[in-house]
Length: 461
Image (cartoon, rainbow, N blue to C red):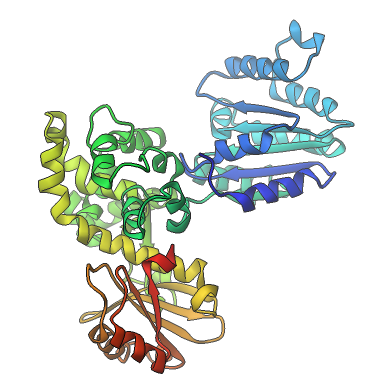
C-alpha cells in the first residue's frame, strides 16, 4: 500500500510544473519511504531513476548507462558506456533541452563513497549545463548526517544550488493507523507502539490478524523480516555495532540519564556521550528536556529515549530473548516476557501519541498552536504534556493508558501538580486530559464548567 505523503507529492508536482531547472534534495532514515515516494512521483513521467548500490564506480556507471538505455531509444547508447558522471549528466541535460526530464540518484551516499568529488562535479555540471536545461535532478540519501553535511551544509560544493529539500519523516500515529482500518483505536496505538511510523514495518503486520499473532509472525520468528532488522540497520550505518547495541539496550531497559547509561555499558561519561551523539544523528535516539528549560542543549536535566518505537521494542523484548526465540519458545516468550509488561510499555508510547496530537492536530480541540511541547518532570511529580503556545498560554496535560474511564481525581492531581511548575507556567494555563477509554460523566460535567479539554484515543486518531 502507498499511504499518505500527499503533501510531499504535491510539493514535487509543483516543482515539476515550475518550468525551471530544479535540483531537489530528499533524505531521511532507512525504510521511511523515500524510494516509494519517488517511484510514485516518477510514474508516467519522463524519468531516469537510478538506485545506487555499494559497487565500484565503473560498475555503477555501467548500470546507470543501462538505465538510460531503457528510457531513451537512442542508437548512440547501444555501444556506449559512460566513462564518468559529468559525461553522463551532460548527455542527459542534452535530452532535457526542450522537454522536462527527471534524473533521480537514489542512495546518493553510495555514489560518493566511490567518488568523494562527486558533489563538486555535480556543482560544476549544474552551473555550466543543468541550469540551461529542463532537468529535474533529485539527490536522495538514507544517511541523514551525510546528506546534511555533504549536500546541504554551507561548506558543501552544492550549497546554494538546490531549489528545494525535504527530510522525509516517519508517519505519525494517526497516519500509521490507516494501515489497519479494522483495528480499534487501542489496537492502532498498540501497533504504532511496537512498529513506530516506518511504512516498511507497518506493512509487515497483517491488518486482519490480532496484535499477538502479528508479533509472533513478524518479530518472534527467526525467519521473519523484523526479527533481525535492527542488526541490519546498525551494520549499514556503523562499523562496530557492539557498543551501540549496549547503549540502546541500556536505554530500552530504563537507563535514561547519561551517567546511568555510561555505568550500565561500562563507559565513562565522555565516551558514552560520543556514542549517543552518533545515535542521535542516525535518528535512533533523542534527547528530551522540559519546555521549562531556557537553554535545552546546555541543560543537565535532559534524558535520553529511543526515538524509533520498533527499535525500542526490539531492544526491550526481542534481543534479551533471542535464545529462547531461536529454540522455538516464541509463544512462551510472548506470554511470559512480553504480555505482562506490554501495558506499561505502551503507556509511554501513548504519551508520545498525545504529544503528537498537541503538535500536529491542535486546531481540532486546543485551538492554539504550540511553539513547543514536551513533558516535564521533577523530584516529586511530572506532567506528561507541557506546552508554550504562540499566544503566551500553556497547556498542562495528563495521559492515561487505562482500561477504565478517567475520573475527577486525575484532574485534581494534575491541577495540584501544576502549582509546582515554574512561575511563567502558572499564568494563562489550560488543562488537558487524554484517555484511552474515555471519561466519567462527573468529569465531563466538571470539565465543561472549568474549561478543561478532554481528548479520547478515538479523537486523536
